[in-house]
Image (cartoon, rainbow, N blue to C red; front, side, top):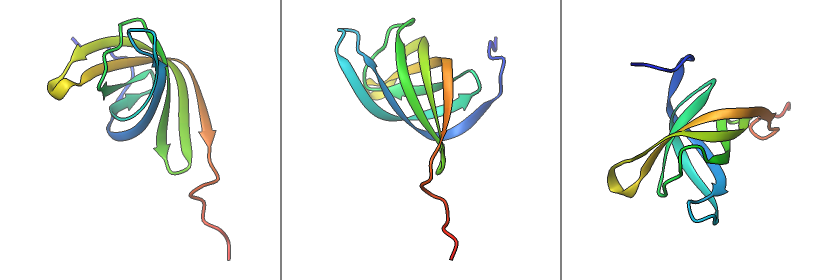
Length: 106
């Protein structure tokens, strides 16, 4: 049964994630989101995170637009090759525009 209320975009979105691992140690990792929607994303990490844990994620949406979100782990499942699939729900989001990638007028 599908529980999502928003459509998802499938693709490889670059994600930077920061938080605390299950032992309370800080981590800062780069990964790819398998899909993203208005309410959250699904990604894989080389470490497990507990359901209910919070993390800060930064998603590069395109060359000039990044979304930063306080996120909560809604689903955590073991995957192949020692990875862990994480369904992350966005708690609070912010869009940031970058000047990088803009073409300059000649």
